[in-house]
Image (cartoon, rainbow over all chains, first blue to last red):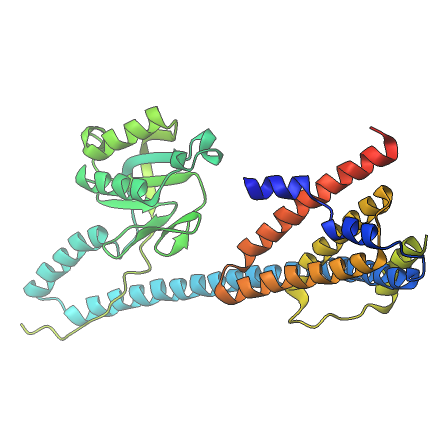
Length: 258
Length: 110
């Protein structure tokens, strides 16, 4: 603190006093003063000009980046649409290739049973809808925000309670769907979500909600809702439609040897 | 009177001529301005106290600007440029405020 005290006590260069005591200078060098003042003025003007000049450029750069992100997202959507179309084509071709004998029928039944669980086909049916959101005081305290781990626990709790298909904000969850934080947002399947988070799960209406509430995930969210005032609403829905996960693509195929 | 006219002329010249500062020197311009302001306020206070000398002003101005820029430059080289810039601004800011307060007291007796 001694340094700060000294700065406050002696804000003027001590040389002024020394020089004044040593000599009494006539007013001859006033022009250097004028020139120096001019330099200072020019410095001010140039700096101000430059700051105002670069502001629009920065804004332009920002808009450019945002546009690029949007166009990349559109492209991704297109590619996902193509994936869905191709997956359907694969299913048709597979059905045609399987033929009509007994073994084919067994395989077909297995495929039909596994497809909804794996997440390669769209499913619809009764289920529960859970809406969660940051608490109103989230701006003041970062701990009042919904984190990726909260959504992970929520999804795992739903699986545990017997959900057959789960989606978050329209993104179907499968074995290959990550739920992660990226910057300020939570991403599901590498797409960032906007609040509030709507988690839909298809399952047996009689057991799904009760099973979830009693699970450790239910306890976790109860705690978040009560102690952190996060939004946490759970309700039964008669009819839910969940899209297929476009990330689930056919990676390996071989001829059946039967 | 001459310094004031010079200051105004400098501002006008800067706006009209728009000299371009080399890219390398651009980060040091704001720091140089803060140092220049410090020298200006110090000089004005010395003037009010009757101890003002041109030579000291010129030397203190140039050395202030150079040292402030040099500190930030060295900081940039070793990766603490913004922190050192903050330090320079804090120290010079304190001096500017103290001098401004003294000038206010001398001018308005308040």
